[in-house]
Image 1 (tube, helix red, strand yellow):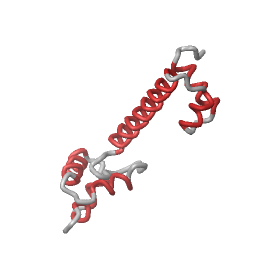
Image 2 (tube, one colour):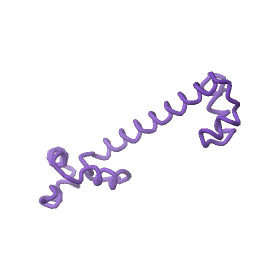
Image 3 (tube, rainbow, N blue to C red):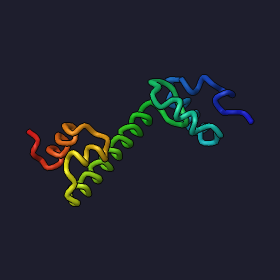
Image 4 (cartoon, rainbow, N blue to C red):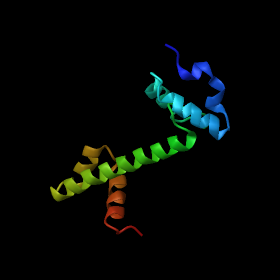
Length: 111
């Protein structure tokens, strides 16, 4: 089975929008798309797993936002349960000061 980028590898690193769109479309049929996306996650150039550099930046921002929201949700649950800052820090794997700073920002007390 051939992998699309092996057939016409130039289009994956072309500066042409047409080539980039063709590469993204071809990635949709690729059996190693997921692995390719992982390999290209921090690449500055090229189409990797159907994603352009801008797509990869947006996806990374989305993942970081989701992680932040998840951590903040867990903190709120622990606060409601009366968990101490030290216990929350241990549970979340965060330094106590980092957690205290985050709590200040979350409650709007940060300067």
